[in-house]
Image (cartoon, rainbow, N blue to C red; front, top):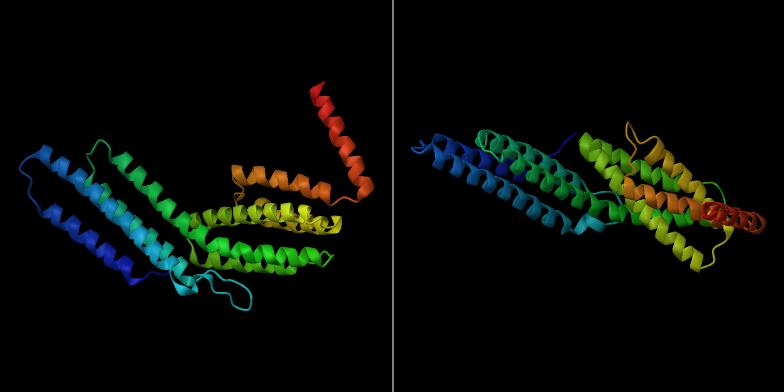
Length: 272
């Protein structure tokens, strides 16, 4: 279910009032009319972007944004309400501007810039919420890898619970964006964890367990991520790097030596 707060309806009422006021004016000069309509379109879009900024700032300042319950973090409902408000106001603003700018030469450019700002506002909120979520994922990955077994249930259950909430409250386009952001944060935290573990001389078994956890995560975010994989170009580069490191550091001594010489052999073939 999509939820909205009163601010979205108040903002739309303002937009309707502005649009109605200018529609009822009788323009004596057609050139002047086009000029004013262009200015009004810009003003409506600036007003909408200001709404994004103020609402985002307000939501991120709420006390419950980083609250843990039983050691876990669940994305607060206010995040989803804010995103729903963004989308609702965005659609109404776009409808107003589309009607006002019918005969304007740069109407596509005006709306194009507006779309970019709207997606940016949503991305920033998702980034904010999923950063804390990923910190819990990292903690659970460490605990699972330290247990020296194949059980990664705590990690997977937490991620799946988070994705269930995301699917419940977001529109389809924002679900895809949220998954891509989430996956990117997980890869970044995993990469940092690997570097710390290397310097801390963690055991091959620890890296092997991390590799098994990563294989499961790839099934969620890369292989079975719906109709499209949620692994953009940057995530893809990071994933390949992590895959190689975990493959090497998860090997026992004899296999690691063998892998080293195989890599050197491949490098020599490329040089030749």
